[in-house]
Structure formats: structure tokens, C-alpha cells
Image (cartoon, rainbow, N blue to C red):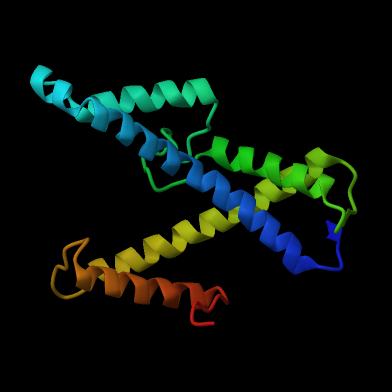
Amino acid sequence: MMETPNPDLVAEKINEIISEELSAEDRLNDEVRDILSQYSEYMRRESVSYQEMFRRIKNQLISQRKVIRASGRDSGDSMKLSRDKVTDISHKVVEMLRKNRELRLKNKDSNAVRLEILKVMTDLLLAEDKVDRASRQKVRSQKREIPEGSEEWDILHRRYYAEELKKLGIDLAK
């Protein structure tokens, strides 16, 4: 899709975009917590739910700042990236690629490039989900029940996760 004398630099710039986009909602959550801390006494006195106020303030800030949620309401899983977020990231990556003087896009159709980026990201997320499900199933299949969130569960999950990634040719030890 592109030609570049410095693929590591391009990969680093793509990584920066993805990291920035994924941390935007974390920063927003921190800001909401700061706002709520200023009203903690009032909320306690008036019996106002922290979770409800957090949700309302966050939704208001998301609306005002036009932030795209990282987690999808459609999946119900707060750890999964929403389709909107993946699409937004693909737009930002294409914009960076178009402006970058370190590379040349072989395909001048920006939307075709964006759709390919979207496909690659979606394929990676689906593969990661499959690896995660397989590693969780291995932990659940132990002879005795291991509570999720325990240190033992986390250690086993990481080990099985790494094993599943190795099957795909990805070695986390490197």
C-alpha cells in the first residue's frame, strides 16, 4: 500500500495515533473524577449516585468535545473497541499517511487505503478476541475452579494467552 525508506518511523507514528486515541477517554474519565471530587460533599449530603453523575458528566463532555467512545455500547463489553472508534482511528492514520513526507502511498484513493487499514485493524481485533477466548477457556478447564481476577488466574491467563499467540506466529518473549 505504501513505499517508505523508514518503515519503523511510519509504524511509530501509527502507534502514536492509536495510543493517543485510546488514552483520550482515559483522560476524560480522569477529568470527570476531578469534577466529581469537587462536589463529593454535596453528592453525599444529597444522596446523589456517584455512578449516575459520572455517567451524566462524561456523556455531556463526550457530546461537547465530540469524543468517540473507545468501548462499544453495541457489544456491552467495555474492553472491546467500538466500530466507531476503529473507523475514527483509520481516518486519522490515513490523514497522517497522506501528510507524511517519509512515504508514498501506492494507491491515491484515500478511502481505499482507509478501508484496508480498517480491515487490517478489524482482523487483528478479531484474532485477539479469539486468542483471549481460547486462553480464558483453558483457565476455566482446570480441574479446580480458579476465581477470575485472582493472581493465579492472571498468571495462567497470561501464559495461555502467550501460547495462543505463538500458534499465530507471535512471540511475546521477543
